[in-house]
Image (cartoon, rainbow, N blue to C red):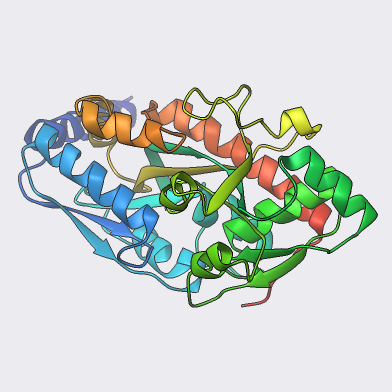
Length: 323
């Protein structure tokens, strides 16, 4: 009985301490590790949400870029950070849903080493083409590829990248063969505009300017229905790819062991951060995206489903890389 009383006393003391930490939190600047190079789309998205989060929390929120090894360097650093709520991590499709299915060695466990806080961005995947490509939509492209396999060059950001694996998923579902051209250290968009390559699977922010200028075109977008900003662009489902659903997402994580009261406070802050700036919401919407939040529980469930979808697609494409 004495042992039980001591154990209960310690337990409730721990709970009250966690609540006290949350009451005082944050009392100093917060750092968000971004495992992406400065100036990239995910980096820009991270900085956008950091500004909004700082408004809510009343403390500076700074971004610490740590790119490399397909995002695994920065993500591993996030896993090893102190679990006090002052060092957070931005995760993405590539670093959480993809790498564990592709690489033979990953020095973190996406589920064990992190506490999900909230998603903050979803971007539809587009099939982007040079304007002179004869195919007008994904269905026409698939029909052409069945007649002439590997007749188009598809740019990617590198083997095992989001753009490459989204293309492999498309090829597997469509029963076609694509010829992939990896751009490991440079952007493929100048070559795509020039017609040196024909296609790319990517989110729209980088391509949208050239789409509006008529230099690129969109053959298909993910989504259950056509996007209101792109009513003339069919979905992949309209091309018969009912199970094609790659989603480019970004979300906020804390190291595992961060007090639940702090995680919950950050999740509540993210709900405000994603809804308070109407101009930012419209910006995301303009390129086929959505700025949104989830509870930690909803985000955890989303992550599990997304990882399973990518795992199935990667297994079908038989992609496995050594590092």
